[in-house]
Length: 415
Image (tube, rainbow, N blue to C red; front, side):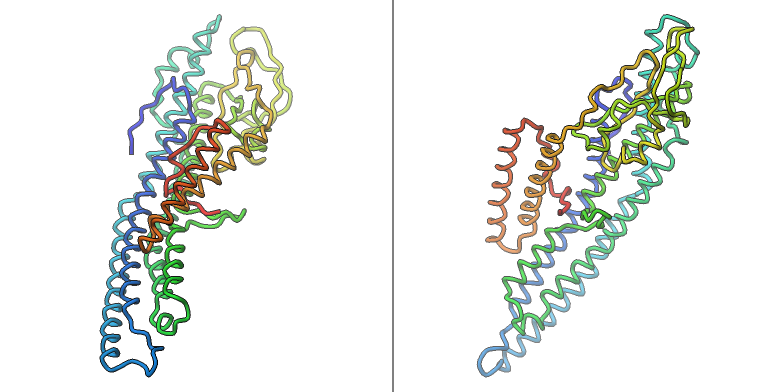
């Protein structure tokens, strides 16, 4: 993974969140693609051997020579399957051995927390530099000289543990998937099915390809959405990074005696998050309309309406999985909360449409990658080009940014 250094002057925390999420997802993308390639190669060989079996429905039955040939192919098929089961288990265990969930989680969360601390320190330092009175030491230059890289472990330890647990679940699924997937392929290509001509061999090949094109499943959440390990790892990474970034920043603010924050919403935020944009929240439990000292002018007070606590906002749906909203320090009398609190329904619909087009591209690419023959591969390639053309037309019409990385195979997440 890339090495990051805290940058207190970072222009876009969203870029940090997105980049770290992509880094994590790329790791699982590579593992998934390697496993699917191994399974596909064995599935193709399985189909080739099965297709050599003579047809028992011929008039008069099989001759003695045909029966001997059938037994030879069945023996070779059984040996191939036994070796495939053994090899796939070994390959999966070796790949999972390279995925140290604890190390990856700790590294990602450490980077996010350091960046969150640095960003908070920069904001507080800016307030100190522009004040007209003497501020407490924590607000002065000493704050910027504080060790921003000394991660606020108290604030982010549970976030790292949560991410680690999520990744461990993915690792377990990776270990089980190759054998389970190949077992299903074996059942599709079982000799009894083939010899009984229950299903055409062409249909069997399509069934195998369709099954492999789904990728490694993660789980189905309570809303019915199906996650693959690629889409799930991206979501888990983005969610955890954003949480660590915010929590570490809050921790840094609290160390400086700042217990008020304001919400900056992410682009194309949903209705629940948009409702909190620009609101002032507390980190110490204070709510309601209160009078607080001006951040810089001694003797002057400011009336502040505190909409709730950070935990209240989260309980109401803000900062949900995949959320890009963040918190910044609120300095009474200085900070101007984000004024854009209007929910943009059209923007959210455009985002939903773009995500649907991305799924179409990924689905076509997966069919291309797991095609069982040249004809199916060419057909899938044509589908990829058509889906990409639809995306280009959409981007031209809406002016949205095209996130090409989301069109890659590791983001395949079904519907």
